[in-house]
Image (cartoon, rainbow, N blue to C red; front, side, top):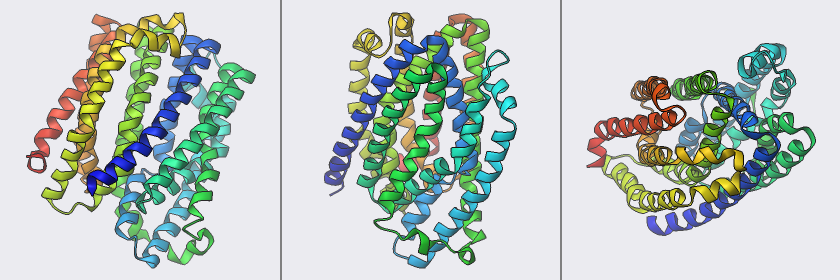
Amino acid sequence: MLSSQLFKITSLNSISVLLKIGIGLITSKVLAIFIGPTGMALVGNLRNFITSVESVSTLGFQNGIVKYVAENNGDKEEFKKIFSTLFFSLVAITIVIGSILFFFAPYWNQLIFGNNLDYSYVFRVLAIVLPLYTASLYLVSIINGLGKFKTVIYINSIGNCIGLFITLLFIWKWFLLGALLSIIITPSLLFFVTVYYILKDISIINSIRLDLFDFKIIKNLSHYFLMAMVSGILGPIVFLAIRNQVIQNIGLNEAGFWEAMTRISTYYLLFINTLLTVYYYPKLVLADSKRETKKVFWSFYKNVLPLFAIGLIVIYLFRNLMIKILFTEDFEPVSNLFLWQLIGDFFKAASWILGLQFFAKKMTKAFIITEVLSLAILYISSFCFISIFKTEGVVIAHAVTYFLYLLVLGIYFRKSLF
């Protein structure tokens, strides 16, 4: 039964991921032609910043929402409490964060883009659309918690198609500014798609009441806030620091090559990431014994990871063709970054399934310790390797970090694995 359901979800997920990859191929080519390696590096900086904003504005509750909705699926009153509490929390936090983004836009511009470029307008637009962006993330988490895996995949697929249209239009009209704006506006439009689907199962108006606001729910979700603050804020800050180190010591173009490699990595990791979020995470939440947890872990390692490894080998063999299709001749040096990036991503995928257990079982302290340790290793090793291997040093550090991370998690969860 598990294998049959996994096959159906995997097949549908594969179609969704292939669609997103196809869209990514188109947008990457357009970005390469219109903004080049330099623009690609700046886009990377903004993406890291938005990741931090997303973590703060959602309070890192997404994984917690999936857990509590899954556990209270049959309790309508408890579900209304969760929904109302999340709604009023969202309103309060987005007003605060949005105001900080809007009124301090010049500061954020200098922090992300430096003194020579003025894209303050981008941060003001982000402030305006932030409530829609945050609400869409909450609603998708609720749908995921209800076990509607197919609906989540449909929403993501439709959102990707809308994103393609917006991205192409904006880049064609405004070049680099358009690329930056599309990163902000596209996710917020997902809100309307999500509302359409969630209204089929939930009456939003009847589910929102101020008297149902429950601080106990916020307290229970606070563990996820602490975990998200580490990975969602500290993580992007580390990546920003590494990218700025590349820019200062090697050049803006080299930072653009690393961003290009990161984009390619993001495409093929989508399959693993989506499958883990949509299918395996709810299974881990409901697993109430080491035996059941072990079954979930090894389902991933036996059914998914071997196929992923084969895919990585194929990608490496056809890396030069991939660069030509995705980018332009200016991006040929990216070819030198593939080997260590692919090795690191294999270890990353293998460790992700174990790392989900931190969220599924609310293991806050263990998560924070391992996450800070891995980010510290990445930061220190990147700075050391950059001085020796130039840009290739960043991907070597990536591989070393995730090998050690997998080793630590394997030891920590050894009783659930063996």
